[in-house]
Length: 371
Image (cartoon, rainbow, N blue to C red):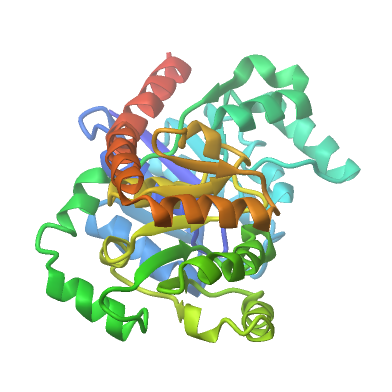
């Protein structure tokens, strides 16, 4: 049985961290023993508990900041003490590459969740560090092309594995969902009437997520369909600006900001349409979650999203285009049969992105590298 060290320098929880957990959960434990190594930041505590609940060992690295060299010293110590066979690094801070990719005692692979062009110094450092990496995994074909352009000397190492969903868990959360649940959520969380059509957006309230353009699309929608409410779930640095925009456009009765929420499957199940107007997106896993629920989806043609959504499962528009968003929304609001058809097609599509399939593909990479 081979020991896989899943290492990340992340200071916070997001989509990449969910994928690390799902990979660890679904790896074939007859072949591989996953161990998580991460920083001791308090924001990671609940995430680490999820691994421990699955009987996966967690090792916390005591560091003061993202550039702390104790990352490297501790990694070497963990590899020796735990007799690790392979290091799978998923790096948040580009400068941290020198810690993980510099390990030479065992094979190293990495998953690049959201590659982008770096400064000259960081780029040179990363290019040099990648020489020791056996495989570079991207989460979309879009990112694969980008990485090959950024690091052409390493193109032969680059492979693509889509992110995955815990489809059984997601569907289990909806087994006992009732119309009373829907009524309660619409009244108490969405602040909407029972017969109101709900358009939901779940994302960090950040400029890159493009909520501004969705808000700017609302007047044209509500002019034709006044019985529609837009629900923004999440928190973030752009929250106050978005609320000011809602007030400026006099949309208070059509918009609700819920903040962070639990039981996301039930909130989506209480909605009618999902919209993610991102300006930049590595993969857009939340689109798959909405499709699995099932909901029709409106999203933007950025990153890996077009690999998830097609004309049978939703509507894709250009980013930063409020006019196209309002047109897409009007089409779906006006046509419940189209919504239903897209939702059912989307659910079938989402089921193909099961996290167990993702884990099997990583197992194949591990086996090839360890030969």
